Image (cartoon, rainbow, N blue to C red):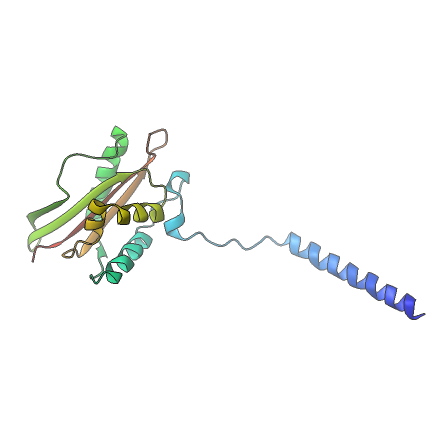
Length: 172
């Protein structure tokens, strides 16, 4: 008799386990959101400018510099430059020096800028810029207070995603 009770309990336990298992299959799994700096711009994602700013600012702070503020005017200029590169299917937009000083709002301004192409995510771009001495100088421009950043995806081109970053600030 105890053997029959035990066998019944085992069958009941197995039935319960199968029911719970099937119930969990019918509930869609919770998808974890991909952080903005890992979203692929060549797959339809748009640039997460705030995420890029956060990544760049963390790097600047670790290097003893002040954080930057996102500047929509500079970002629009960066978008125009990245679009020009995408239209020409080139990784550079011209021979402009990477660091210039010019008169601007509130007096003389310093401006550091670099273009690049081929990086599919903010994380890839940041790693490439950090490892490239000319790009790294832009990221770590000590007089920088504002950031403009843009990425343009153009399917069918050599590099696919075209980038421009601008760091500007007062020329103290």
